[in-house]
Length: 529
Image (cartoon, rainbow, N blue to C red; front, side, top):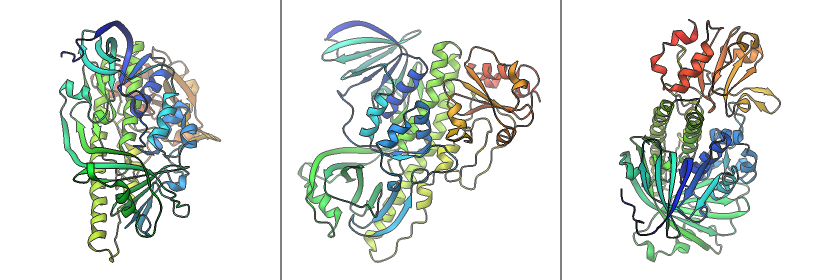
C-alpha cells in the first residue's frame, strides 16, 4: 500500500510492542489492560482530543467487573447517574405519561450474580477516566495512513502535523470504529444488515426535570431522549430529516417534548451518524487484531455495543501479554476470534431484534394512539444476564472436563452460574466486600479447598496464584476433596478437576492452554480420569 503522505518528511522509527489504533473506550481499555501486564503500548488517535460527544451510555455488570479489576469502577460510578435512572420509559411525547417502562437489570439494582453494579454514564465522562488508568504513551492528532506487515513486526505510517512518522510494532490492535480504515485495508468482509438508517443526535440544554420519573432513556413517537449528565444536559436522537441542512432542530426537539413542556431550548451540538449492523468475517489478519466497532457494529438499542467491545479486549490483552512476555505461544491468539466471534454474532442478532421491537411499539402508538400498547418483551429487552454473564467459550484455550453445560430456558435472559470450563467464574463473596472475582488479576488463579494436594504441582513459566476456598465455597464449583478450578486472567475457567488428578495435571493444563494447541492433547491426560 502506498501512503498518501509520501510527499511529507519522515521521522525515524519508533519501536513498541503494541500499537493501538483508536482512542475510544475500547482502545483506551486495551491500553489500561496492557499497562497492568507491563506491556508498553502506543495509542494513536487521529482526532486531537477525546470525543466531546456523549455517545454510548450504558455499562453493564460485566464491563463494571472489568473496571473493578482495573481499579477504576468507583470513579466511573461516581460520575454516573444514580441507579434509579437505569430505566427505559416509553411515551408518546416526553411530557406525556408512560405507556410502558422497564428497569435495566443489573444497573437499576444489584443482582446476586455479580459483585458489580452497572452504570448509566456518558462516554465523554468515561473516556477521561480510562485515559488516566495507564501511563503509557498516547498520541492525539496522529492519523494512521499505512500498514505493512513484515516477518516479525508491523510497520505503521502515521501523519502528525504534516510529518510522516514510522512506528514498528510487534502487534497492532485496531479499535478504529465501525468505519475502520484498518479493516478495509486488510480486506476483511462484514456480514449482516449493514447500514440500517441515518440518524441525528441533537445535544441541547433545557430545564427538564424528572426526579419523580427518572429514566436513562425515554423512547417517544417523535424520537428518543436521554439525560446526559447528572447535573444537566439532554440529547435527542431520531431519523435524519430529508434535508438536514435546512432542519430547524429547536423546533424538532420542541415538538418531541410535547404540549406539556414549554421551555426554551438551547441547541449546543448536532451530529449526523449512520446506524450500522454487522460482524466482521475475521477478527485478525496476521499481526493485526481488531476489536470493538471495528469488527462488530451493534445498533445502540439495548446498550450492548460498547460493552461487547470492552469484553473483546479483556479477552485479547492477556493473550497478547503472554505471547510478548514469552510464556504463551503465538497460537494462543487464534483463540481470540474463536471465542469472541460467536458472542458478537449473538449480540448483533439481539440488538437488531430490539431495534425492530422498539420501532414496532412506536409505530403502534402512532397508528392507534388510544389503544393500550402491550410490550411483553420489555423485561427481556434489558434482562440480558444470560448473554452478558453466561457467554461460553469453545477454543484451544479451554480444556473441557466432560461436563454438560446447564440448559437455560432463554439463554439471553437466564444466567445459570457454572464453573464448567469455558464459562465466566461464578461470583461468590469470600468476605465482606471481597468477591472471588476480586482475587483474579494478571495471572492464572487456582482455587481449591486442599492446598496441600496442589502445593507441589505449582510451576511453569505462566504467572499463577493459588487461593484456598472453604469446603462450602468449593462445593459451589462442584469440587470434591482435592478438586480445583483453574481460572484464566480474564475470569474464564480454563480447566476443572472435580477431584485430585493424577500426575502433573496443572502444569500440563497451563502449557496446553497457553500454547493454543488444546486439540492436540487428550482431555483424559489432563484430568487424570
